[in-house]
Image (cartoon, rainbow, N blue to C red; front, side):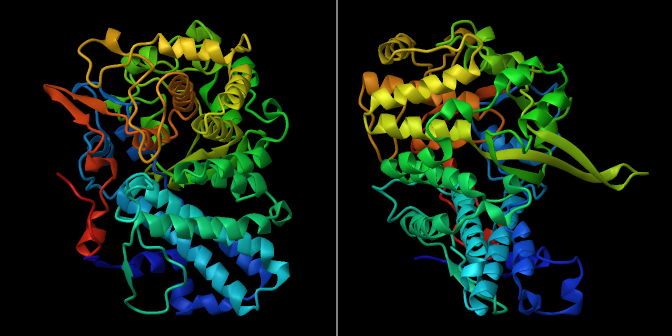
Length: 518
């Protein structure tokens, strides 16, 4: 039986974010005041999560390993995520904070939609309506990525989903049912489809911090990749990439040729003027410190064993790793190797005592990742020729020698690589290729699988430090192991329920059904 859950406290927190700090002290229901286009547009600034999943998903993935007890763990959430334990921390990078942030963003979107409806849903507010719908869809999609199993058409009618909030709170104690993944994804899809034709870039003064048109289509492409609607992935990615994808992909050569300064290169990566960046998220998070070139949170990280054998310093289609431009921008630490990919800022609330917030700017959607979404969709349709063309577009912009390969060369390269064992006894066993167990779709052995292996390899490189590798591990049922000092490796099997991160404790205490655990 489905249990019910009370979202009220989260939604109230969201409403508190939509205007000045003390509006609840002066007006019990400030939503009545959202009565103009300017106010609705301003409200939508709050419709984006101000927290990030990256610590939890990057630590849960195969991009992290245990460096040993001689190194520190600054926050419990980082360790619990790595150990695939139920995360009890309630800090800025915890499930609780991410849950609250996503539902807060959804609440702001719902308030904007209600205000638009109250004004008669005029055509003059179509762009605001489109943004609000897209934000609502994204908030729920982000939560599903974290707290649910991957969408699987064969099991979606029974796999646990999450509450889909579609209206502002008007009751003291509204109740929600968790529902199924089938229901959740249908509602996300409905919002996306309604929103896409409404999005207008003319609405924004700084488009890269909102769902501008390309960002919206990039989100639609990624969502449909996870939804297994491959024709739509291609259709929507085409809008983002145009006829010459290489002209809108990231200029890695410019980064490589810039001064060898971490802050300079990170700022170039998140630059709103960079064509590859489609949507930027400023969030409160310690990830820039734990994942970056700081002696903080070193116990678990992207250490040399992984970096040299599985990711940026492993040989690839481009030959020696030095031909991969991103590998040349690395800030090397034995415990964690960092490619400057996020802006790190500290907001002081008390300079005298050094108190404040760690803030990070992340790239939520980029043309480069959208290209690989399309490549994967082509490959899963067995259109290996077009998949190869997209792979070559990525290689052209990411390698010093502008590597280009035939389909046969790609297939042969990955065919001749050994599968990495789930649990290794020596680092020499590590490779860039892992066995896949696709969830709800099929991949044929031989050419198709090797093209997919290539795309998964490129996706892992492209999304390093951005948390998306965890979704690929879930979607492809990749079994991974986490080493633990003084203990046997912990293996995440294909059917391990820990692939869905546990709901926050207070959410479970309020009555929402928890994710199963063995």
